[in-house]
Length: 352
Length: 273
Image 1 (spheres, helix red, strand yellow):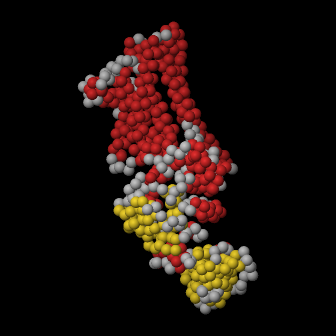
Image 2 (cartoon, rainbow over the protein chains, first blue to last red; image 1 turned 90 degrees about the horizontal axis):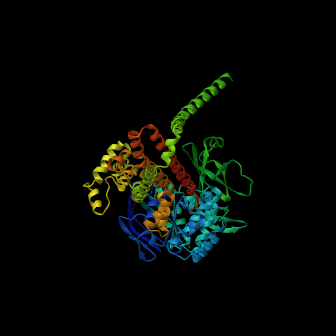
């Protein structure tokens, strides 16, 4: 759908160098990288706002490297939504259709249709300034999607939202993509954005792509130390997921089991934060938690916290304060219980 | 407790001083107006005959028409310039900014001299435009040229600030939604900067109406309001000048207030266009 070949663009302090990647039909592709890696320059170049100094952009079989932005079948949603403040919601969404000189009646139908899809019909006459972040996001999505782009470019779409809105929007993006079948290229500096969304991911650093692959593969086999630290999620475990009541049960390759609040089944990569692991001398009774017994392998001071490495049948890392580490008298060889919530575990399917 | 009261007292005194300071300025303007009105009432016969004087009304008409035309030309030529200045990252930008602001710091007699040199019969613009039938020396278009020149910074600076406030991403989004650069300018940047453009136009209009030195150097005639007051002062005496001044004041002040009112009614921030 979208193929980028050896693309190089420079823009002030930011640049992308020699980038090649492909977003397939119907694919949700996430580019992950720290702030300043050049992600925005890359998608703005794909949108046609900047022209590359070398390389090619092929969209839907057509070379669009040097064409004007308005002639490219891409939709773009900025992090700050960038709704037109002097137009109401309906006029914002109809903007692109007006540019294409779609007749008023047909325009109205299309706006209503896309608003129905995104469940924002009730916002039509409102001014953008009066909308919440999540609502603005939906309007920005509608404004881009109403033109039926081949590729939807999303610039940090979840970063400006608060926790619960963020989760709702994540589900929304997944649903919209399923319904429209549009390929999505989503850039973010937040690795949690990939969960339940990304089919494949690319890791970007200093204007270059350092790794591309199926999401699970990249988490399991980070190409280098930078990728591993950037994805620095603490615990990454390979296993098999099966339905178990309202949750799923993961059986690791070493035969240990724990549960996760997820619907993903089959071969998976399970991930959870080291901060989400609680250590205790005796097992916790709560059934909502995973409680595994293991042995302390190492205790590593890490700034104001202490990193504890355990073997619970698979390697597990926990992050503790100095006080709790002292209270538990942790040292290599000590037997200990590690507890973490099923809801703290994220599952990434591994390609069949 | 006592300390608290003392601090309160100090703050109150401070506020009072501020009020007095601010009040002094308003008071000064009021005093000037009251003095003028008192003088005018002293000679009601002169006031009445001046109201009936067609020279006065012709001067007002000439001034308003020339100022209006100057502002229209300023908007046509200055809006694209302001937009380019707001968007440009060119290293020559500070130079352009300084040039645009030059009429602000020039003594108006020098501005008048510059306008005269450029637009006189044999001036670099006066000559070719003269061939097309536009004359400037002691002519209506000379007044327009002078008003345009001194109005440049008032309009362009305001419009540029307006455009600078419009995030460039809004135009970029518009371009990904199918708008060309012109449509992005006309449908996004211009409506969002319209308030500042209009405000700049009104200020420039006000400046143009009040201009004397720059106008008088290229076009003593037809008389504009400032020239009329000056001629009355030097040739007729105080009573006639006062009568002319109060009529002009009411006319110019009234129109300016009406324009500002209309502008705020037309352009409410964030209101759907």
